[in-house]
Amino acid sequence: MKPAKFDYYSPQTLEETLNLLANYGDEGKVLAGGQSFIPILNMRMSEVDCLIDINNVKDLDFIEIEDDILKIGTLTRQRTLERSDLVYDKLPLLRETCEFIGHRQTRNRGTVGGSIVHADPSAELPLVFLILGGKVIIQSEMETRETELNDFFLTYLTTDMMPDELLTSIQVPILDIPKGYAFEEISRRHGDFALVSAVCLMDRNLSGEIIKLKLAIGGVDAIPFLANEEDLKPLIGSGLKEEIINEVAENILEMAEPDGDLHASSEYRMHIAKVLIKRVIKRAYLRAERNEVPI
Image 1 (tube, rainbow, N blue to C red):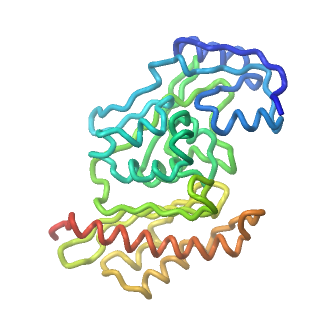
Image 2 (cartoon, rainbow, N blue to C red):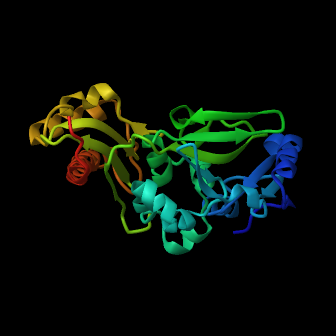
């Protein structure tokens, strides 16, 4: 199928882009990589009056560090993120996660900002930026604001952005990020959307006790799911004990409500979520061993 007719604009600057968004409002939609949006248009699951193609706005394509903050432009390709030496050095978890996103061909076109704005609860980048404490910078003609990702995702495929706003960058603090990390997902085939994914960050001391722990799960709720500190407490101050890991996995998923679909039932998603939680905790623990913190 082909999309319905629409007006097409290709702005060259951020100012021009924001002006178009202000003028068209709900009738205007932004095109970046198009890996999700173009199929939606082609299948006529959505129609637009105006398509604003930002691929020529080169100021939105960058990866840099400023004041211990890693800043990634919304137009940065996923493949660029994957191959960045700066990302590999400062956030190896992010580099490793990129390998799970679709295939190399889709990562060549898919953008970091596009994945965040699309807000698919099974997508890899929203989940990882969430656990890393990322913020998004959002601009309109009237203002620039920043929002924690924990507040940015509202529900399935929905964020708190207004029609005249554009996500311009993602920012991640690189100080005090736990050294142990792990990302895992299960999909029907490599490159498919994840049925469930899980990511863990962890520090341990020289005695083998866990001293810092963060965990997030994708595919079990309408938004990426960040485990609260209370549910993780049984593991803090302990080593890698199977019964405690099982307890934590149960606690984390107590409020989860995964949907069933033609790919997996809700019961199956819950089952593999528990499997992945245990797996990433164990992998992150082993990696944290190389960077043990004296206490």
